[in-house]
Length: 330
Image (cartoon, rainbow, N blue to C red; front, side, top):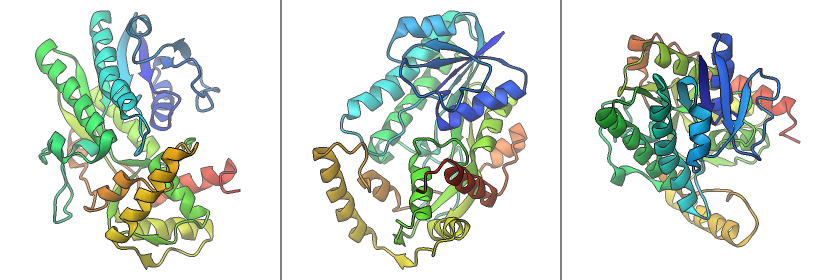
């Protein structure tokens, strides 16, 4: 039977497609008409056109499929029109899940995010049981992903949706073509455009390990359960130092105060809003998130799924190599 993948042209989605093909799945991918196809041009997949906001196209895409990996999402820390993000992330998730129910899909893996999980004030790693609420979510991306995950959990409870939820941390590695906010941070460091750092921390994971975690969740996960797919918790200063070293740059040494960066982010967003820029140089929501160390534990996925991510250094190395090879640093 056929496996449908949404978001297949993106960073995480294309890694999922590759892993599914390696495992012997027959893969169908849902793409918008004008979506870039660089990440999947060389892959033996069936392509169907559609949009998460177009229900008939989703019903067509899901028809005849036995499984679904829903990885599509609008992942931006700033947008001129937040309504677009909610239409894709929340309404689009509901639409594809309802289409899957109608088509009789028997296995679903939904790609959520650690953004939906609470954080500890003492910087100890959070896990799937760490409480959070919509009021805790900083910015439209986090809010929309929290709401989308709630949609999935409600459908599991109310309509027996056969969906497993995975919560990737900060994926890095090859094929980050946009790039993602984490990838942009790596790229800015490689270009020597990261003069300082904020005292925060991230969980870094190789994108291919995230893809492996999706397959493990498909094979061993329980409907309604969620599993963090993370890697290694590192201070931001160390991440930037490692990237700079790999790129042959001097690492940033200036610790920038939170309240010193926030006005710069505000000004950056103002400039972006009145120009043709697609993203500000610094997003205020990105700065607000740094108030806590974003550390997470993947113990549950390791115990229940057999998840075994590689060290963060390997992920950063592959990201730097890929950006260099594609000429992003010119």
